[in-house]
Amino acid sequence: MAKLITALGLWLCSLPLSAWQATSLDTAANPAAEVTEAVDEKTLHESGFTLLSDLPTKNQISLFDNRFRIDDKVDEITLLLFRRRGSASVVLVKPDGSKIHFNTAEAQQVRWHDASSYDLIQIKNPMPGPWQAIGRLLPESRIMLLSDIKLNVEPLPANLMVGETVKITARLTNGDQPITAKDFNEVLALEVIFVSTNNADYDNFGRGVVQVAHFRDDGKGYDERARDGIFTGEFQLKFVAGEWTPKYIVRTPLYTREVEQAPVVLKPAPIVADIAAAAAPVEGKPQQQAIPHQVLFRVTDDSVNAASVLLQGRVRYPSGEIEHFALNEPGNTPRELKLHNRGHGSYILEVAAFGEMKDGREFMLNLPEVSFVVNRPVQEAPVLADLPQKVKDEIAAEQAEPVPEFPWGLVIGANLFILFGGGFAIWFVMTDKKLADLLFWRKKEAKAAPVATTVEKNKPATDKNSSNAQKNNDMDDILDLTLPDD
Image (cartoon, rainbow, N blue to C red; front, side, top):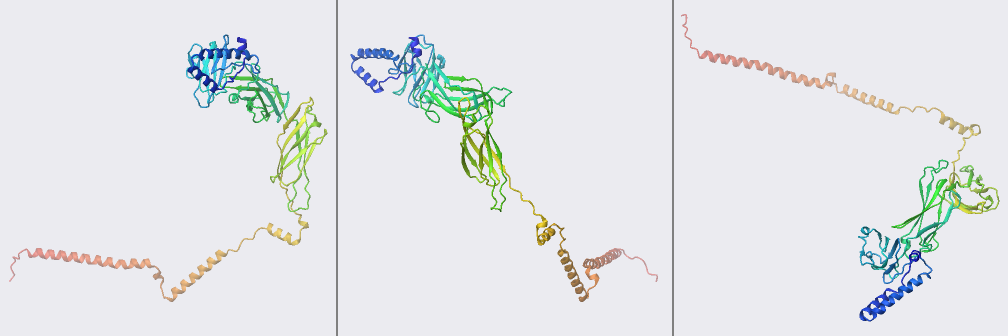
């Protein structure tokens, strides 16, 4: 029985939820129907396990009324329970009646990832017997046994080239059968990376890891069918040539599956472009016919069948105009492309190559961008001997040393000085002025001097009179006691 459980797949109960609700109501209304219900449930379980071996999908566990049974000797299972978006996580009831909640799962050594629409639960050494999931499970909900997930990727070609577009096919299986559960694309994604081997003999030494692509099994992009368990996609090798190790990774909240393939050597692009740029036409000469530019594509890798190479792409002219081209002539000779000469500026070519290797493998790659620049034409100076005499004189005059300009400002300033000076002299003579009259500051000093002298002269006289008066007053106070001589 353990081997059967390990090889089993997913089984969805075909009865809708309304039927189970009706059965429960009938059982509650009629106690006599309880025995019949138990017999019917036993019959359903027995018939369900009997039909497991006949189902096209393996690795299933049947789900009846949110109940499922786990056989003994099962080392590890993973349950994926889809429920209504935004509802609370489910509660697992073990066969002994104990419960496992999301917040108590870690204490019971159960790994539990709670998302908005599903619960992903990993249980090691689960208790054998009937289990029950309590929650708002969708009618199409199912329980999956995911302990035997394998990732198989087809190997890459050995002779890869830079710019080549590669198609891959990866299959994710559970018990050797593809996982086709609805909404499972929300859980699984395939990541493609290339890891440098750090071989000093190649140009990618020390380049580390390159993220190349990311795919989902949702039927979008390059995926062919949604939820078929097969990842199909294309990616372009747009990184440095060298020795790389391809690695494919499928990550889920609880699992990581990796496939590392043997190292491959990424070679440079096998087609190179030789450019022969013509000179740009001279402006002002529309009658001159411009010579077209020439681009020659040649195959440099002997492993490529040169006769099978086809080229197509587009060219961007300096004016911004875009023109498409195709070189699909058969033959081993180099492919020649002639471009219109649209004057000076940058010419940019984007080229895609299609061909076949000599071992029969077909390829498609984008060549590195091809570009070249046409400079503006330089006009040569005319020969003097061929010019008329008038033009020669003009050129000679331009090349001669410039004659200094006449000093008009100095002349005008001198005349004004003479004019004002003469007018002042006439006014001085006509008014009979003296030279001393011009010294107005000397006159002010002369007027101030007499006033000061008068003050000084008056001051001593006053003092003298004051002293005489004081003396006379003193004399009057003394009695004259002298007798006359007579």
